[in-house]
Image 1 (cartoon, rainbow, N blue to C red):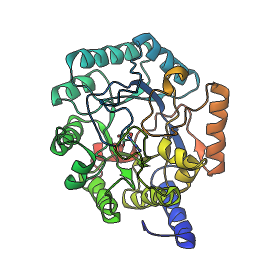
Image 2 (image 1 turned 30 degrees about the vertical axis):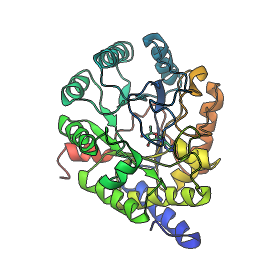
Image 3 (image 1 turned 60 degrees about the vertical axis):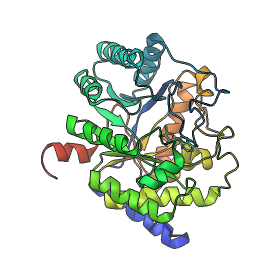
Length: 338
Ligand code: 5AD
């Protein structure tokens, strides 16, 4: 499936959409993405905001700024948000997250919160769940341990990342993970194994995007082929959809970066989630994970119209006001599977 091209590829994508519409939904669920801090303690070799990149201007939004972003999502009938940042494990940071969650839950009790702030001790995950965080995203980046250490320094730990995914699931979160596609040293077999990994750990959500070089990293001059990355990215979505029919799969920003209709193509390959940016416009350029990351539009009306348009073009229905829980999660919780 991953290697399919031309007609065969069209058939694959069509089949994935049929599987999605039959087993999950033909609504597109929106997640307002709030990138609230680019301060990071890790040094992932590929990432533009890794700790040792001194050219990045570091920022952290205030609680009030974050509440304004949430308000903006709410006003636009987007009732599910993703709070994302660089990774930190210090107490100052975890206390800050507790505070953010408390404030959001007080002011917007019916908003669904997904956190994406990296590896933390189990007790912190437990506390966050108790405070009302329902979902957590933590990409494994590659499910092959040896490949993992070609992309990360050995001060990081593949096993700890697995531990986190396991803890999150045991605690009761809807758990999402994902990988980069066409990353350095990756073989197509790795991607096939990644899909089996997602199936085996039984994820509820997935975000996968093509690797894109960042100029201030060791992979700055990595020779990557946009067309190939795009096709592989789309085929990964379809193959995962066919393997796990009722999970939520995002058409990611990285996909949109390598093709100007990447999100539409992602939906047409079987994805059902879009994560429009709701961070303050002024900080978006400081959250440059990779080169050419789009900063989106500042105007809410333009944004909402473009979301409606992308749904229409891909034959789907915009899921405004729908928190869009993973059906897979709901079925798992009610004991229908596993
Ligand atoms: N290309 C594509 N994706 C990247 N990410 C970080 N750096 C890059 C890059 N150069 C992704 C990682 C991370 C997510 C927040 O951004 O998969 O989990």
